[in-house]
Length: 174
Image 1: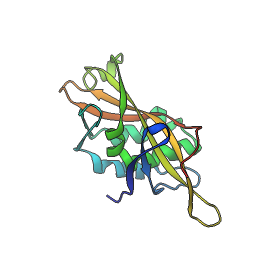
Image 2: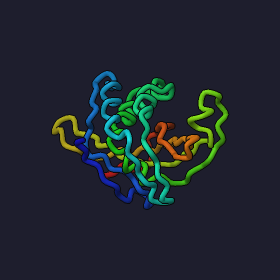
Image 3: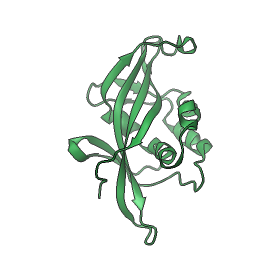
Image 4: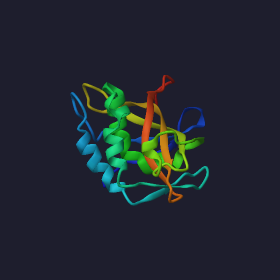
């Protein structure tokens, strides 16, 4: 898996995943099948949240949910491109996740796979913006997202999706 990702202290001292390449570059729209195939490389692994040492596993249904969820289908433009490219930083996004909030499962369809509820964590990532003329990176745009984790009947926590992606309006990284 080819990745060029690191964790930095972003504005206000907030941990930010710096994704240094735009891998998914669709002009009109992203190739979500390609994103889904890329995410399959994480399946079967787990990563720890640094703040709490909790293990978050990546299950076989994660790639399909990430690339085909209702929330993803509603995305357009820069935010859709941001979600596609955030796939490169999944291990680091889990590592920097903070402020976990619990909510009970309320949907019948998730009765087993989210038996013990859901957790939402705050994450940040930065993506490069390229100069149109030189093709060089001129700055990084910072995005905020909510990482959704399900607490399964087997007692393990599984990454489910990345939601509510928003471009931060603060100063971009230079």
